[in-house]
Every structure is written in structure tokens, then in C-alpha cells.
Length: 528
Image (cartoon, rainbow, N blue to C red; front, side, top):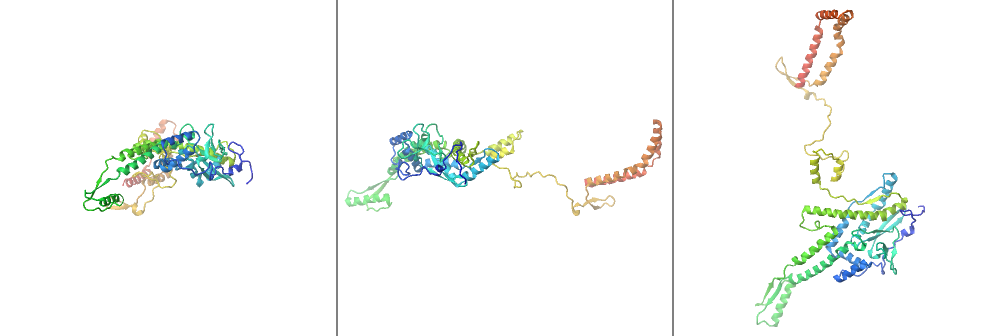
């Protein structure tokens, strides 16, 4: 591969050696160590308030550690956050060419083949969506130089390896040992995703900050609930002994009562008894369970924007309404992630291999809202008879059905066959074409060959007209002679009367009679 100066999408020179180096590699110790102490254990409101205050002042390590632990410790928070991530990555992405020109189509195909369809690309999207909980994420692009510049893989980097600049609080920088300001990230070496869930600092916009108080309160609730169950979850066992029982008998009874809590079996001497007393401390579900369910519902609202698709007892109509709110969030997440991928990956890839472009192909995660097919069909059933013209392609797109391929089997409504163009009639077999008709002479029935009355009649007319000049010549010749010698109208009138009396019409009348009889016969056969 020939050497050339690598440039970015804006035409500025880029160091190829810098692209090939990994910058945010973890270390055993120091500011980029992947190991650290737990934060969630023993967390109380006072310590939590200090962690949140430090995070807002750019001391984010403890908060990011807590955000990671929340996904591991809280089943509900981990579930709804994972649902929101997978809702985006579960959509098939598309690559749109900048235009219909051959060059733009070629570039889009290269992006699709070498970037989007690579196996590691989807994992990179999952790692980028880690920003939903923590406010930002950084994935290092591992570039490879072969026949073309392309990512050979992507490395998720712990968000604790980074910090924000001390001036604006918006620029993500790499933590460096001994540097209070950190190190600026190398251009096009990282995919930095910062979803805009709320205005302000990115570190204050993550869902973990929104859900952390519910996480802490639920931890206290579950702890108190466990203590309640230890006291009131099992009945109290009381052993009774007689007045004459000595220390030895009392020890036997006490051991028997204790053994009932573990072995569920014991023996006692005659005269002693054990009584089970039900606890009257109230129902823990009514207090602690209701509190835990309430906190889970608030976390669902914060992460998904609704509760109907995660909790029981909801009607279908309610779930559909709340699902629409969730689609709004999904569309925003997909749009923001697509913008990040286009900025930090697609455009650099195109510039490195094809040079700066006036227009670049775009990566997109298309989100389409589920269509209520029944409502759509009912509306079409009412609108079409009223005269509204609706394109079939539009209806197919709304429902999600593609146009059938040529020759494919077609589903049709029962009793409604496809209109078939008329075919020319086939000749019937002699046995099927025979018809029986009553003979007027003998009164019996004779088989007659089937004929096509229309075709026979046309042939009869053609035969009759073929000799019309010879048949009419005996009548026309005297008339032409009369017109030639007549000198006045009276002479012509007198001559025509004489010709009418002297003309022999017998042969012409016989011919016409024969033709009429044949035509009548053809008509009778057609009616039969």
C-alpha cells in the first residue's frame, strides 16, 4: 500500500502512528486501575450525599463505582436499564448513501461491509449505551492498516479512567498520573457517547444519579423486611414444664424447643408440653412490600418512562398508551447514538480511505412505531367506499408487508377468485358436441353435429355475396339500357313499369329462399 498523508473529514493531517496506538490501556495501579473498593456496602444517606456532591465537582470515581454496583445489586434497576439498552441494539441498523451517484453508493457499501456488518460492531453499540446509566461512555477504536483503514475491534474503557475539563465540564479527558487536568483524547481514537437525557453536565445526566436514592431506600427497606421476618416470620415456641421439674428436665425441654427450629423434631419427657404461638406483629407485605414496589415503580418511570410494561395488573389499552411514551425515549436514544457513530466512526473511516467528502453516508437506527392493524383496516374499510384514493404501497408500508414477488403464491379471500382474461373457445370432442333434436318428419330424435351458429352464418353470407354480381346481372342490364335511351322522366317511369312486368325473378327468389332456410336452421341450432 502506497504511503500517503492521512487526513480527517475536515482535511486536516492525522498521525497514522497515533491511530495505531492504544491510549487508555488499564494499569495495575494508578489512576487507570480497573480494581477498587466497593461503595454500595454500608451506604447511608450522608455518605451518598457526599458522593453526589463530589461527582458534581468532577470527582467522579466513587459515583461511577456506585453506578456500576447498582446494576449488579438491584435486580429491577438492572432489568429496566438492560431493557432500554437492548431496545436500541435490537433494531437492524441501515447505512444510507449520500446520493444516488455511483461514487456515493460505493462508499456506502464500503461502510456497510467493513464497519457496520463486522461482528464486533454490535458489541460496540452495547458498550456505548453504558452511557445511559453513567452519563457518558468511551470506547477506544482499534484501527488497523491493511488494504484500507478499518477498525479491527473496539475496547470498552472504564469511565473511571476519564474526567471532565475543569473549565466547561463538558470535554472528556483521559486521566493521567500527576496531571490534575488530564490528557486530551487523540482525535478519532475514541467513540465518546454522551446522551442528552437532561440539560447540564453529562455526569449529572445519567440514569444512575436519578435512581440512586430509590436504590438506597430500597436497600434499607429490604434490610428491615429481613429483620421483620426473623422475628415474626416463624411462630414462637414455648415449652412448659411442671413445678416438680428439676434443672435436668428444664435443660431437656429447652434443647427440644431449640431443635424444633432446625430439625423440626424433638422428644420431651411425659408431663411436659410445647406450644406454638402465632406472631401478631402484622403483615410485612403491607408495609415493606408496598414500599419496595413503590420504589421499583419510580425507577421504571425514570428509566423507561412508564410502568405498564414491567408491572402486573395493567390493561392492554393502558399498556399501549404507555408503550407509546417508551417509543419516544427509544427514538431519542437511537437518534443520539446514530449521531455519535456518524461523528466518531463513519466519517473518519470514509475520510481515511476515500478522502474528505462534501457529503458523507449516514448510519441510522430506524425506529418504527407498532401499527394497530385492526384500527387501520377498519379505517380503510370505511374510507375507500367513500371515494378516498389510497395507494397500495402506502398501506403495505404501514402494515409491514412487502410487495409479492412475481410468480409467488398469493393469499386471497375465500370465494373471490382472481379475474382471468377470457380464453378462446376450445373445439369440443365429437362425442360431447352431439346434440339430439326432434325430427319433424318421423317424430324421433337424431344426433346433430354441434356447430357454431355465428361462424356458420358468417360463412353463409360470404358465399351468397361472392356471386351477387352474376345473380343480379340479368336484372341490371335492361335497367342500364333503359337509362341510356330514355329522354325524359316519363319515358323512364313507363320503361321501369314494363321491365317489372317482363322480368323473370324465379332464379333469384329460389336462391334467396335457400339462404333464408339455411339461416333459419342455424338459428334453431343455436337456440337448442
